[in-house]
Image (cartoon, helix red, strand yellow):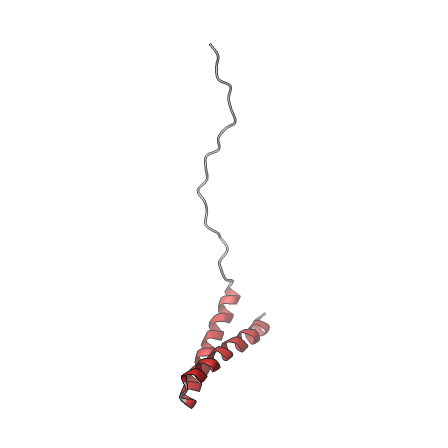
Length: 76
């Protein structure tokens, strides 16, 4: 009668842990949030000023983009 040889121990599978790092850092979230607020304010003011929706949208997007760059340098 032969006894089976012990094979390599099968480790128990670990449950997959979620990533601990957030998708955005707090600094990035803050910069984007403030830039979105500034872009919205600029867009609404342009809409009230000219009454043109396309111009207000363009002003808001431009305000968002330029304030993102400015805040990145300022808060960085």
